[in-house]
Length: 88
Image 1 (tube, one colour):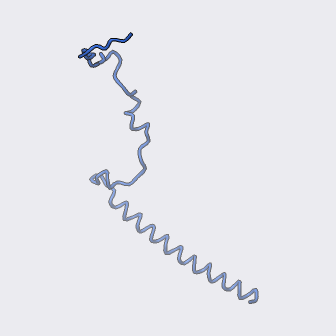
Image 2: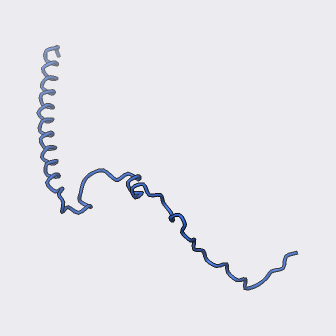
Image 3: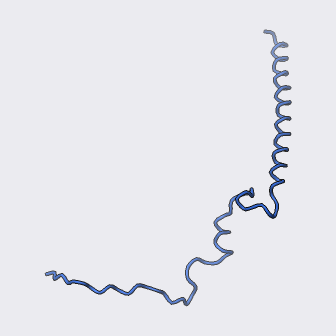
């Protein structure tokens, strides 16, 4: 093959890929519009799209985990022994 034939073949391939790319971009816009349509105030959280929450947001807006200061602890009373074993 000569140079001109190869160049023509490559140019045709590029043109075809550009057309396909434009079709795919249009399809993406169409699908994104469809997704945006389903995202409103009445959409349940399971159907809403978006990123996941960060762990910092789940902590409760800056609250520290655990009991509050001054909280009286609750523990189980020690069990009474039911038998004694003598050890030398």
